[in-house]
Image 1 (tube, helix red, strand yellow):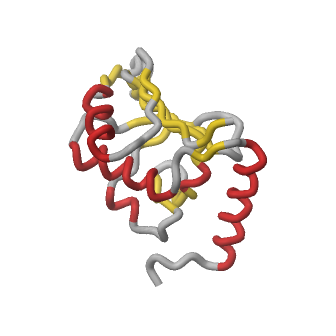
Image 2: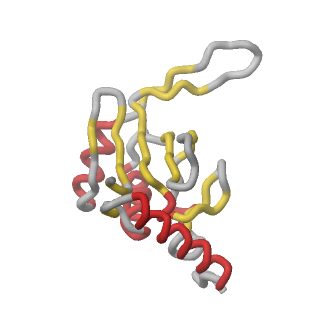
Length: 147
């Protein structure tokens, strides 16, 4: 059944929600808002494809390709990612889209610098909803929680 959350998955979601309540004072993003953010970026067609993501239950941020609409088919609390498989949206502590991504190349070649359109991303997101965007010179950050 598409869109159904199993009892096992519900237990995992409840565990994440309890962890978030213990570690943070405010939730700034919901499952629905994360989905809207990913859809807004895709629909706007802005050149932003990569980000760093920090999960509430993992100590270090991880590189991630931003999910597209096709990745949003799992049950609502999840998104399918290339790097991690299905992840719980409420597990995202923050997402940071860098202005320039250093994309590795093989055979001892230096990484390729790929610019990302943070201005376009910021405009697209501002037009689609109230997202807690934090713009810096090097990145656009979306916090999911605040301490």
